[in-house]
Length: 113
Image (tube, rainbow, N blue to C red):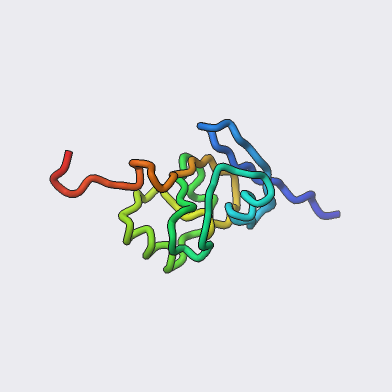
């Protein structure tokens, strides 16, 4: 007899939202079903609308593919950020959505304080 499929928990500690998804769902798939606080637009790793800060569980997300890695590098995103449209979930994660206007999107230039 096969074991029941383990559900994976996606948690947004700042808003208190929690949902359980299937292994290998993308974060945007979960957003469709559970109205998570992630906004998205292109779903092709281009617009960065869906950027999230990974608070815990980075190792439980699929590794970034070339397009996502290049987009994050171009916008100088911190290393703990990912594009939700590109992430498959393999284990529990804690996230925070980073809106377009959020100052976390802008890293200080070299020499700035």
